[in-house]
Amino acid sequence: MSTANVRTIVRVRPKSLRELSTNAVDLLTVDEEKKEIIIQPPPEGLENSRHRHRVRGPRVFHLDECFVPSVFGSNGQASEEEAIFQRIGPYLIHSALEGYNTCLFTYGQSGSGKTYSTIGVRGQAGLIPRLSTFLFNEIERIEEETNAVIRVSISVVEVLNETVYDLLESKESKENDIRIDASTHNFSQGFSQFEVENAQEIDAFLRLAVKTRKTTIADQYGKSYGHTAIIFKVHQKIPKTDKQGSMQKDSYLKILDLGSFDRSSNRKSGKDTPSESAANNNSLSVLNRVIASLTSKKNDLMIPYNDSLLTRLLRDALGGNCRTVMLACVSPCDFDDTFSTLRYAEAARKIKNISILNVKKSYADSNENEFDTILSTLESDRVQMKRHEEHSKKLLAIIEDLKTEYEGRIRSLESQNTALKNHLCLAVDAYLNPVDLNFSKKSDSVSQKSFNEMVQAEFNSFEKDVKLLANDFEAIVVSPHDFNTPKLRNIEEESLRHDSLLD
Ligand SMILES: Nc1ncnc2c1ncn2[C@@H]1O[C@H](COP(=O)(O)OP(=O)(O)OP(=O)(O)O)[C@@H](O)[C@H]1O
Image 1: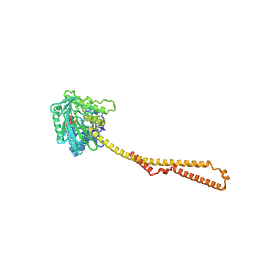
Image 2: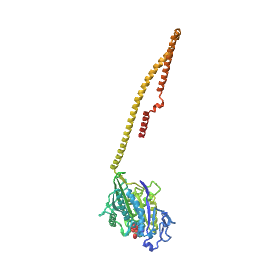
Image 3: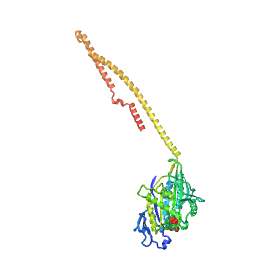
Image 4: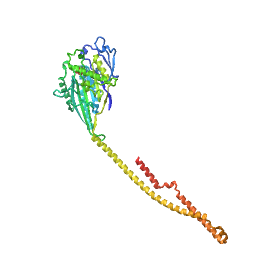
């Protein structure tokens, strides 16, 4: 998802022959660096203008790009057309191929150069042929680099008098509504759609559309009242790669050449202007209201998209899911219309669109991918568990050995303890029950001597027992070093290894 304002590009057409012959005053100056266009009210008495009375001094408009013929004069017309294309074409085509909906619409008074800029003239290709060539060059590059399969289809319709005409249908086909997908705001089926494989095929369909269009416009007035929409649908199938599953991208590029606003139908009674003009004026004023509502500071305004077919067609392009470029065409000498166009262009530049990538991932492939990931995780878990199990077995064996060894030691200590107890009992008994000395005194000297020897022997035996006892005690008291045996060290090392595995 990305947010982008409507890009607004203003193109000033050169003075017409009529304007040159009448020495019409050039009212516009452009500051390319600052991307500003300054309009000066016409000198007093030269033109009767509605705005002249309200706008006294020059008025500055800020836009994304401004093109004036003088800037390109020295390089010729071809470089001007190419320069405009470079500011618009790659942005729209790359966005559409990424999977974003895109729209280019022209806006401006009658004779300001909308058709000249979009279609071009003989020998001077406009934006549409350049976009077509660029689109197919990019498709060729992507298909070569990624194995993607990209299909493009075209529909051309005209909105006139609140009716939509299918310009690629040989028999007249019209609808009173434009069906738009509620969730995607996408132009739905209902009009003929043809697959195209190169820029030449697009050109052929556009020629057919222009022929059909002639039957529907009030061309005796020399003005295009209908709004022409060319819709390219781009469908991409991107095959599965090592990194991602297969996917599908569906986007569109919508190009609208809007009809002209006819002031005469407002000023005059209307009897000599066609009904198409009034309807066209109505749809353009609804468009102006949509732009004004979207840029109004009041948040609770209803955007009047549904008040005309044109604004329903432009719904996603203005404040919706689309990357949009507005090409505002102006005449250098007509203050009223140029002022009005610049005002709406500057306002449109503030409209924020939120564009969403129209990408569908294949669930089958993504499930397969997820399954692969889970399987490989399980396999590595299984290997780790096996290693834990082996270490645990080793630890258990060592513990079992130690247990046997210590059980033996405990048994031997117990028997030593019993022996010591017996010795102690005898020694204590000898101490508590000494030999009768009176009897000894009475006896002869030989008896006295053997008595002394007997006491000495008893004492020696007692001393020996005490020493043994002390030795045994020494053996029983287990020093910390006793735990520093190789086996215990083994256990410690194994445990540490086990802990690190669990980490
Ligand atoms: N940048 C330009 N350089 C040279 N000639 C131009 C340029 N822009 C417009 N013109 C000429 O001005 C005339 C009117 O242009 P165009 O038909 O494109 O106007 P438009 O806005 O489409 O008018 P309408 O809405 O009434 O059809 C044409 O003769 C066209 O060749």
